[in-house]
Amino acid sequence: MIRCENLHVTFNRGLPTEKLALRGVDLSIDKSQFVTVIGSNGAGKSTLLNAIAGDVSSTQGKIFFDEREVTRLPATARTKDIARVFQDPLAGTCGNLTVEENMALAYGRGSRGKLKPALNGKLRELFKEQLARLNLGLEDRLDAEMGLLSGGQRQSVSLLMSALQPSTILLLDEHTAALDPKTAALIMDISSQIIAEKQLTVMMVTHSMRQALDYGNRTIMLHEGKVVFDLSGDERANCQVKDLLDLFAKAKGDGDELDDDKLLLGA
Amino acid sequence: MSLFAFFGTLEIGFIYGLVAIGVYLTFRVLDFPDLTVDGSFTLGAAVTATLIVLGYNAYLATLLGTLAAGAAGLVTAWLNLRFNILHLLASILTMTALYTINLRVMGKPNVALIMEPTVLMPFESLPLENMYLKVVFVAVCAIVVGLAVAWFLNTQYGLAMRAVGANTRMAQANGIVVKEKVYVGLALSNGLVGLAGALFAQTNGFADSTMGIGTIVVGLAAVIIGQSLFASRSMVVIVLSCIVGSLLYRIAVSAALNADFLGFTASDLNLITAVLVGLALVFPQLRREWKAKRAREGKQ
Image (cartoon, rainbow over all chains, first blue to last red; front, side, top):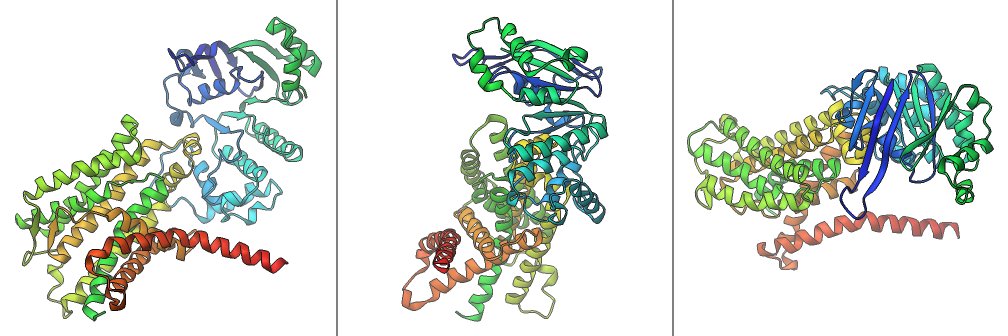
C-alpha cells in the first residue's frame, strides 16, 4: 500500500544548520497493516509521516501508494488517499469555525470545493450520528464554536473527521500525547474502532513503548533517519517493553545513552 | 444636519459598506491584511469614469472597473504567494504602483462625470427625487452584493476559504489548495472595493486620483464597528453588519463635523477617523474588562 524507496529528507541543505532528517528509509507497508513507529526525539518519525503526507518534499528517493508514484504530488493532492490526525488538538480543527463547519470541511476532503451550500440537513444528521459515538454530548453542540471545546473533545472530533471520507491511509502523529491518560485511552479506543471498521492502513507515531506494542500489528523503530528494526508476527507478540529498549540500545550501538532514552521512551 | 446631508451620508455609507465587505474578506476571512484597496478603489472609479466618458455603456464600464480592481488584488496575491513578500508590503507595493496607473488610465488627475449617462440613468424617469434614488440604488447594490457574499461564504468553496485563513495546516490536510483560495479571495475583495469606487464616481460625478486615500482605514473601521455591535456566527449577519458598521461610521463622522460646539472643519476628518477607529478597537477590550471587574465585585 505504501512503499518508500531509499527516502532521504534534508532540511536547510547547504547551511550550517543542515539536518539529515531521513537518510535512506526503505519501507513497504501492506494494505490494512497497522504500523506503530517509535524512536527518540529527532529520529525522523514525524518527518517520515510528513514526507508520506507530502508536507515535506524528499531530497532523494521515491514514495508509492500501491503502484502509483506520488513523490512529486503535492500534499493537497494526496489527501484523496490520506487522512491525518496531528499531535496538537488545535492543529487538526479550526477554532473559529463551528463543529459542523469543521466536519463539513473534512467531509469535502479530496474533492474540489463546489459552489453549493457546505451544510444541509442530511449532512447534519450524519455528523450527529457520528458525534454520538463519542458519548461526549457533542451531538447537541453542532453549532458550537470549535474553540470552545476542550483539547480532548477537539481531538476526538479530529479523529471522526479523518474518517468522514473514505481514505485508505491514516497517519497518526502522537495524536494522544497532548491529552490526559483517560482521554488518551478514549481516543485510542475510537481510533482502533475506526481503523478496524474501515480497514485502514495506519502509521502511528508514538512515544509510548506500551502503546507501540499494544496497538497495531507491526512496529518499526527509527534512529538517525533510518529504520533500525522492524518487528511483526510472533517476534512482536512475544516482545516486552524491556526487550524493545534492549533492541533499541543494540541498534544504536552504544549502551551509554540508554538511560536518557529510557526516560524518553519508557512506558 | 440637513436632510440632504443625511441622505448624502447614507449614500456614502452604503457605498463604503461594499468596501467593508471586501476588507472583511481579506482581514478577517483570509487573515491577509491587504492595503491594495486604497489603490483599487480609485482604479475601479478611474476605469469606469474613463470608459463612460469614452461613450461606453455605464453598466459595462462598471463591470470592467470592478474586474480591473480584482486584477489588482491578484497582483498583490501573486507578489505574496510567488515571491514570499510579506502580505502588508506586497499590498503597499501594488497600491503605490496603482497611483501611477490610475493617473495613466484617466490621463489627468480627475475625470468629471457631470451629465454623463451613469448606472442611475435607467431609473431617472422614476418619480423619485435624485437624492433618494441614489440612496435606494446604492443600498440595493450593497445589500444584494452582501447577501451574495454571505451565500458564497457558506458554500463548500467559501467554507474552504474561511478554513485557509483560520488554520492553514488543517486546510491543507483536508485537501484545500491554499494558494488558489488566497488568489480568489483577494480578487473578490478588491473587486468589491473597485465596484464601490465605480459607484462612488457615478453618484458623486467624478473620479479623482486621490479619492482612494484612507479607504482601508474606513473599511476596517466599518468592519470593527459592525462586529463589535453584532456578535454572531451567521455569515448573513456578519456581512450585513459590515454595511451597518459603515453607515454608523459615516453618521458618527458627519455628526462630529456638524456639531458646531466641537468646532471641527472638513480638514479635521482624518483625526476624527483615527479617534473613531481607535474607540471601536478599544471598546470590545474595555467591555471585557468592565464585565470581568463586575463579576469579581459581584462575588465578593
